[in-house]
Length: 265
Ligand SMILES: NC(=O)c1ccc[n+]([C@@H]2O[C@H](COP(=O)([O-])OP(=O)(O)OC[C@H]3O[C@@H](n4cnc5c(N)ncnc54)[C@H](O)[C@@H]3O)[C@@H](O)[C@H]2O)c1
Image (cartoon, rainbow, N blue to C red; front, side):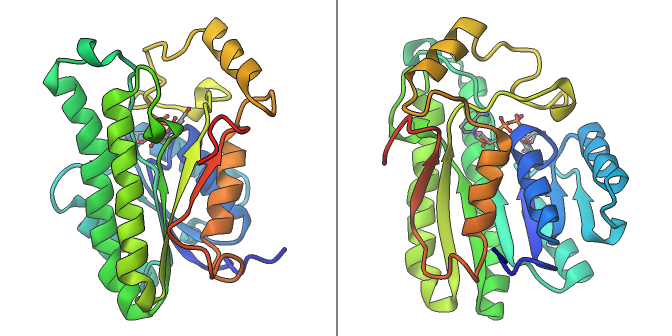
């Protein structure tokens, strides 16, 4: 199926690790141009080298190691895309952070503040940065990478609250900017464990801390209707499809859980 994404100008936040890296690969496979925005410089460079080694022309990739939590960072990344490519056709708000904890154990504000900063503030700023451009273009797609935790899961109180906020933000964008040809949808990934150490850098939420042990992962897998774990490619396929003006032109304000059926929103 032709998705009409050849040459499309796409921004993927947190695009150097795990899910974001898979999303970048998905767009590149469709011939899109991708701005990979990830504050982990080493992992960013590794990701770009892998893409070039697989034959992707260097002029199809832009890199930014800006910390998207910093005020003005998102505007600068979008300006760099406008300078190089003249606009932005799609934004994927994927950068995120999560460390599971029971709510009453999550009392260290500096820790949960980071969740709010990365998952929500950076998402708001990136979204606000692309919208005027998309309005002028009369088209554009934004996809939020939220989580099944948005619907309330154990040990995911603060994290889930930031992800539920992304859902509300997406629906507001869909309602306020639909008249400008801008679509905004939400993808909720199931558990996506990095396939290898190369998929993540030091800034990844998977680096250092054990998020889920083997028994927990096996138990999640067994509990899913489809009885298999989700991969970064599974997420990428859905995100790329939703970003296609050609194939998803009438889809906006929607939530898709790509999780083997873990939740059915
Ligand atoms: N992996 C999962 O099981 C899972 C499940 C549901 C939802 N999600 C969501 O999917 C997204 C990606 O998850 P992942 O597992 O690939 O995470 P990850 O931690 O492996 O990768 C996230 C990337 O974002 C970058 N990043 C973080 N903060 C940033 C900032 N302020 N500025 C720029 N870059 C920043 C990191 O450097 C990292 O490379 C997140 O939003 C996460 O909440 C993941």
